[in-house]
Length: 306
Ligand code: SF4
Image (tube, rainbow, N blue to C red):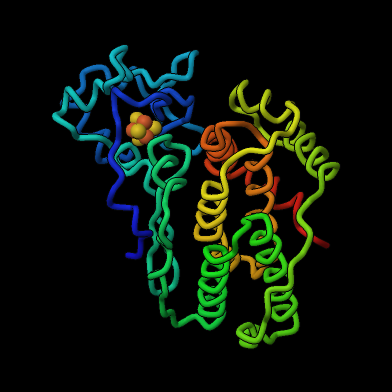
């Protein structure tokens, strides 16, 4: 499994966390093995969980968005009752895992404030060692292109310029994929493209407000507020690196690398104008968009060309 260099440094702040995931209003699925175990160890587990639409079992959330096991001292009652035996999702979070042909990648979700702080403060090239080999020729092209993009983002003094170059790479690579010549990707230069301008961003914010599911009031307010200039160069570069790492290879499922690069550059652009501190905006985007497949689908459709 491949991970960015900061991955092992993550440690949950638990009761000292300022914005705990256990109070984010998420519907957390409970795996069958944990549920069976909890039936013997957590007396009220049947009452505090319920079946979801897809047949899985989920923890009930209280009207204020908190999990029913989140205690007033910030600790998890299940953790305490079972001596630390958390269910699959709770024990993995905020780590995410992506399976590709021949390798697995992992990272940290920026919806967690501790992870966001760690990822956004990195000074070295944390993605430098992430080269892989795969039997899938198109995936290999994407892996190589993402690596070049990552090196470019790290070296480029202004992350806004890096985002423009990444978008240009996505467009040129898409052109090669569309004519059946993706193996020529190594010949591509970084020809920059313009990111969305102020008016286009305002329209995109309006569309997010009207077309996607808005989970928290904070998100609605942030989208309706006036744009600001958010984030230091280091924070914005680290965010762009994270997005490139997490989303570029997802284009293997659709062969639509331009839409994936458009998504990366749009989220980068949105975070750069959403609110200060930058980490708070990034966290909102992660909780409202990245953790919601339906919202991600709407955004991709909005950004898709043709
Ligand atoms: S948001 Fe992160 S640091 Fe806070 S409780 Fe959840 S995993 Fe721990």
